[in-house]
Image (cartoon, rainbow, N blue to C red; front, top):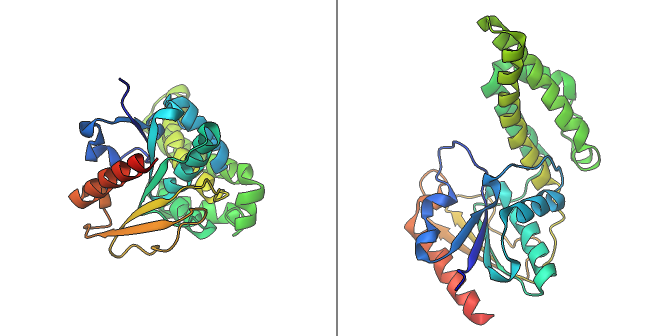
Length: 260
């Protein structure tokens, strides 16, 4: 007998907070598919970004009992829930952890933080000079996100090549190493732009939103038929570290599965 499936949208990589995978939902009999652990797409709109991830995850739509999204990836999870609903006719439950709007200002702030980590003040200054406040406007991200991500990629490449050339490596070695750094940072920013470019689709489903106590967004989730919020006392906005989060997820999935 095939196990019920969970489809998880949680950006991979190092961070201070725990990942959804750390909750080990597999131990409760689920076939958990981590959609963002495969090759991440270059798509800059949530609908197409999520479609690639759903396809690559290998889920069987009829077996999916829940879609889980962490932080900004919650918008990608919502698109996936809508796509699964359209394919099979019934809505899987959507569970979000510390999610919220992804405005243009948030994308720009995250990009500046990434540039600071990569190349310090000089990299941030180069980004500011290239953008002139226009690359990260809501209009630019919606209408021409490809220009934004290409400018970001070019600046990162310039700084990477300049920094790594000082190590005495060959030009080919420098280029190969630079591309690894560029892929890392561009991948992060791409997923944020895609999250910003979401359509908040209605999928005739409800949302369980598990939030840290001081999380800034605790309102009704756009596009959801209804939103139930559960507040957990997480330390450092880290809901995945709390046993209460895991318990709430499992309880909600069982309740919604029985109701279907």
